Image 1 (cartoon, rainbow, N blue to C red):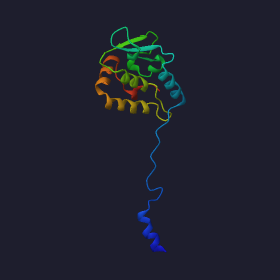
Image 2 (image 1 turned 90 degrees about the vertical axis):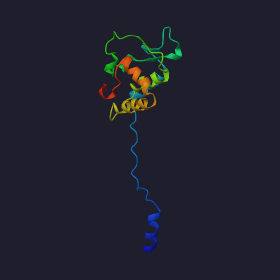
Image 3 (image 1 turned 30 degrees about the horizontal axis):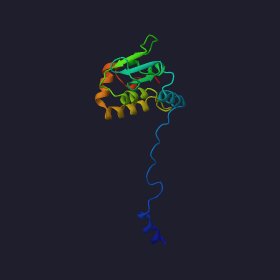
Image 4 (image 1 turned 120 degrees about the vertical axis):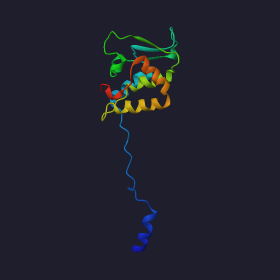
Length: 147
């Protein structure tokens, strides 16, 4: 009987042979709610326009000043901040939307962990556009953002 057990063991992995992968941190309830409002374009009080005025709807992205205040480099820490921001025509609205959406991400364990990961992804997929955005708006360093 012991020979049978010895012969069986190397060929059958044990269920706990590999440690389980940690689950990604879930967004907070507030983050989830704010993301849904951003994605729906509801109650936005600042509009980012790509190219010249008047800006077509497919080249503009609305956001919320209160959320953008997390990033001090954007300069939305006062009510005197502009309601409309014009950006270079070479940017794509999808990259702009991704970068603005990063400001809405927050997890309970590490408030800036999700934004850091999302910005790293944008840096890999669209580094030139992100550099243009940073030249226009300021640095996107999520480690310095307010929670």
